[in-house]
Image (cartoon, rainbow, N blue to C red; front, top):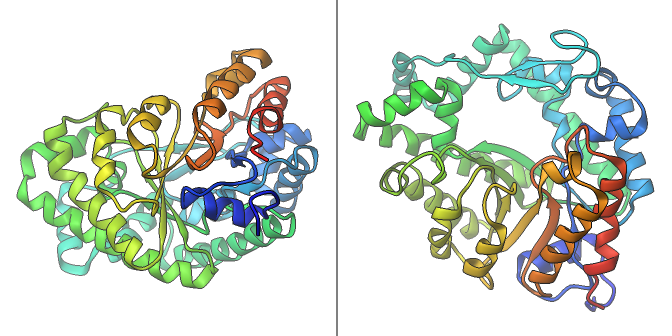
Amino acid sequence: MSATQMTAEERLVASIALQPVDRVVCAPIIEQYAGQYAGITNREFMWDWDKCMAATHKVWEDFPVWDSNPILIHGRHAPVGQKCGPGQLKMPGTDLAENEQYQIHEYEAMTRDDYAIVREKGFMEYRMTFLERIHHATREEVLAGMKQAAVLRKDEIDRSLARGQSVTWGAIMGVLPFDAYSLMRSMTAFYKDVFQMGDQLEELLWAVNDAVIAGSEAVTKMVGNNRVFVGGVRGAGEFISIRQFKRFVWPMLKVMVEKMAEKDIVPVLHFDGDWTANLEFFLELPKAKFILELDSATDIFKAHEILKGHCSIKGDVPPALFTSGTADDVDNYARKLLGTFKNGDGLLYSSGCNLPMNAKLPNVKAFFEAVEKYGRYN
């Protein structure tokens, strides 16, 4: 297919490979904003799957330039998320008011003694123990939740493809090993582990790395999509020194991306927080084999300067512009962003992490309209 007329999937694949495209990929994470746009409460959006999917579809109907869907909601859908979600979830209508945003409650659910379970039985077995604990659920309930999440994931993928969208990633594989333990232990407790456990912790981090790589291979075959979401934030230069990064984060990250590339798996490194100080490390990763997704805390223009011609970058209209700025502010930022990344630079135009639930409609319109104004190459 010529670059003058591409399908959404062709456009995404070409962008990852740093090849010319007809226009920029538009891939914001819509999530809870969709419910607000459709005029339903967040309780309805998070608890009623059909309403949730209808609201998401309405956003696409009104803004069909949204051509790549970063599927996310299936694992946070309240009946599922409260059995097997990534953390202890507080939901609107039960723990929170009807129209509040859901929250992930972090606490020191994992103890230092629990590391022994990882050593003896492996990380995936401990992960099940952790989910039982935080959700106050039996093993059977957790597994039932996972089974239902897989059903919803397929539905979310099928609906996206039926609209003609690409699916930005086919599955969410969790987070980097450093973040996995930090989220389970809580940030304060885990940072103590970093300084007090040393070599023992490195061994435990590799156990998570192996599990993520193996899980990615299995799930990509299952869903028929070779792109996976891998999150990271707490290993960024904003939080830890480069010396600690080089010991506890980078070796695992480098091997993870290399091993995935060998298996033709494309990790979408959804890296919230400020990674500006770490950007040059990404030049050591396989060229055009991963996506670096930024949330506006990292200087995306610096990222482009350093990584241009090496990897696709996803981002990054800041959340504050959607909520506190004006439509002109969004338009000006989008013009700068889309003007900086040239055709073949691999930009995936997106919100900085999720589109805020309380985004102003004129600002959202300005975001989508910028694609045709500044992001078409043919």
